[in-house]
Image (cartoon, rainbow, N blue to C red; front, side, top):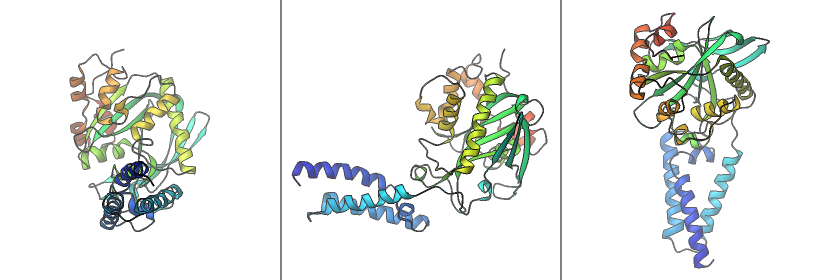
Length: 331
């Protein structure tokens, strides 16, 4: 291989070596064990071998050897398929399913855990029914486990004859796993739509995980909210039938919320805050999706629900109490 070709190969393979050796996709791609330190050690070793083969050694054929090794890893990665059959953590052990009978939607796998602490809870999956014609409005949550440009977003669909239906698009970790944003780029986690009661999905974040949670009323018609709800219902069933991997950049919470809003009739393009969703509330404010008659900083301050959620705790009127002091959108 000539100097130019060798340099190009080294540059290209050096880039993929950096990606491949980032510390997360080595072991699962190689089909080995999921022990964190071993996974990290093998990934670092793979990266070190790439650096040696591409830049340090003068042995002929090492660049091609590393390219071949990477190709094997890539082929193995392509062959990895998502599954519903894993030792899941109890919070994500049951995939929800829905059936529609006219105006009536029946949901199984509806999560309604009773929490005593972050890790001490009674597992409780239920069956609930909702009437589409009684769906009146939509609320948007932004939750931060730490300050920064990334958070978690999820929705609640509000009904005039029952409590809100909360849906959160999340990773589906196995027992012993925790969320890792880099790992989520490399088929580390399956995807799940957690459907449940706000006393579970919201309260676990505000009262036990101590995340900062903000709730915004979305300015939309009941008809638009119902269209979006039906898109969600369809996706929940498709995911229950065909597992998918979570991907931070293409199959995650905010990306999917925007995707389904598009399917329900949203008009608008991509915004970087769909990825950097820690700033998504400023985006929806600028887009006129929330009441923007208040200055944004004031709206955001009044939309933080942690104190109200902690005061309400597991009260039956939890959902009403976390909304009691929120700004009321002007007609």
